[in-house]
Image (cartoon, rainbow, N blue to C red; front, side, top):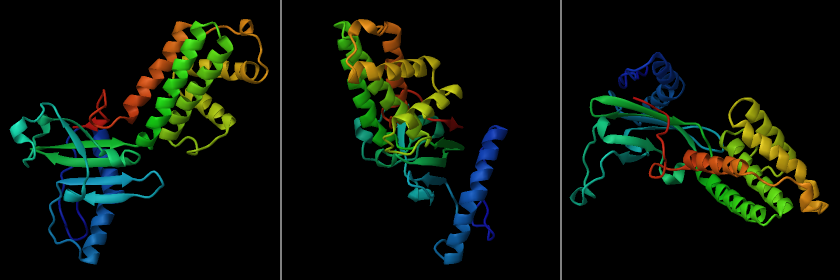
Length: 269
């Protein structure tokens, strides 16, 4: 990573062409301009060795560029620290790190981060927004699901469908807000419906989910407002219930922090 005054030289990620191109793009668009700005302002001395760099994308727009000790990350080690190691400061080798992500208080933001660990470099990124704030919606969707399952078991199919609609609409909102495909806080049912069906057509969500969402949506008027008899509605199948359960798990995983995540964030080593 070079500025016009050779502030530093950061080796590009020695992996695939894709990783190289991603790194080069962020270097040209964010890292080099920020280093040049700091050089011009006299806030950094040259040459400067960069061992970590990060671009934070706040959920309300803009970009924050960080270097070295400014970079904020939470890391999970493959082997937990021993009691006598707690509170100590020491360098970690690349192979010791299982995964890393933003700290809990910044999980609503997107980021691109590169860090030197031992003799190698690690790159991680997430362009999913609002992970922390989405959790309460996922929790409420699961509560609606529980109510739907109980009502379904009692033969109260209208109430079951009304609650499964509430669950699936909340999960749909989370999917769309995480990927900024809908304005956060939108209360329009039509916007969520069109958004999640479009998302499904792109292959980003199972057809079984959009199918159940649409079935519950179509039944909602009769089930809630016209109080149509339960016998007029088909009850929820176990397969349909499992569709919603699966999306709860998927979204919890996407919104989890470094300690909770079941799978690694997107990483290029």
